[in-house]
Amino acid sequence: MNRRTLDIAVPLIFAAAMAVAVMVVGADGTAVRVVAVVGGMGIALYYAALRKNISQ
Image 1 (cartoon, rainbow, N blue to C red):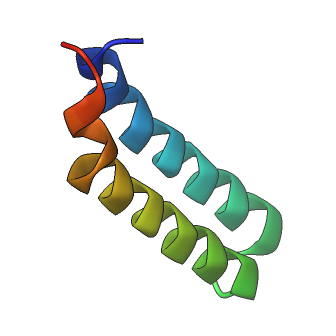
Image 2 (image 1 turned 180 degrees about the vertical axis):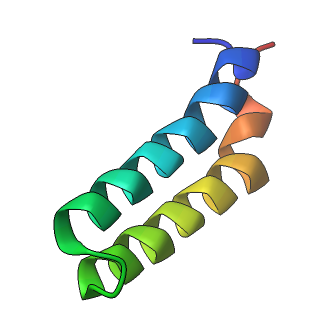
């Protein structure tokens, strides 16, 4: 996958994971918080470090 594809796919996967967590657990569940924190850290890691090493 190239960088342009991942720039679109990474946030969409995070949004889908959040939507699934909210639908399964409910908006006030601890699992939703865990998905939000882990997903946010994953997106930050992608944009801060991993994106530099991927070819355009």
